[in-house]
Each structure stands twice: as structure tokens, then as C-alpha cells.
Length: 120
Image (cartoon, one colour):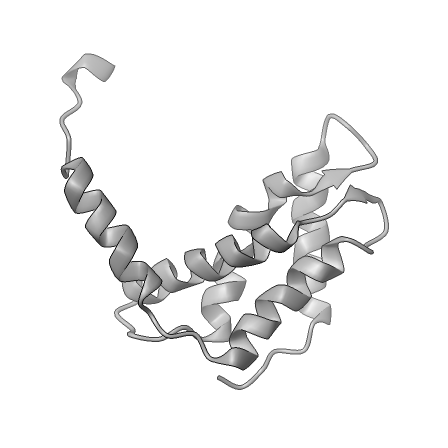
């Protein structure tokens, strides 16, 4: 099955797409929103190890990519919300071991609900 897969782009084209994504503007309030979400994971109940400051960078990068895929040339809070679980759940270590991704997903969703959404 894997042998039949064909590349959809070259490594150079993929790198170009990544670079283009980095150029999508992010308002300071939206960047701060991403940082607040990551910071909140560090103090959430049941979390042993929350998302690092570097996770904030990747949350913003993912939001930039989401903005492009949404045909927008700038990031809005909805972009951050749309990618937060996928970007952060695997970065949050819960006190409970085996079902930690499901629990981390729940924690991140609760943080999104509790964190004030900025105006872009």
C-alpha cells in the first residue's frame, strides 16, 4: 500500500510553503492569546507538565497555516482555537498516564472556554 503512494510536492516546495506561512501577520493580541493558552496548561488541575514556551511558537505557526488554509492573509483568534487541541494535546503530560491525550484534550478545551478571546 505505501509503495503505491506518490509525492504531492517536492521537499523544496514544502519548505517554500513553510516559509510563506511564517509571513502571515499575527496581531500582538492574538499572539498573547496563544501564549495565555499555553501558560494556562501549566497550572491546570491534573496536569503534571504543561505546554512549554516553545509550544506557544508552534501554536502560532499552526494558526498561521490555518489562516492560509482558510484563505485569509492574517491570523484571527478562531485560527488559534481551531488548532489548539491538535497542536498542544500531545505536549501536555497529565498526572494519569495511559489516557493522557484524551484528558489533555479536555483540559485544552476547558482552557479555550475559560480564556478571554481578544479582538484581532
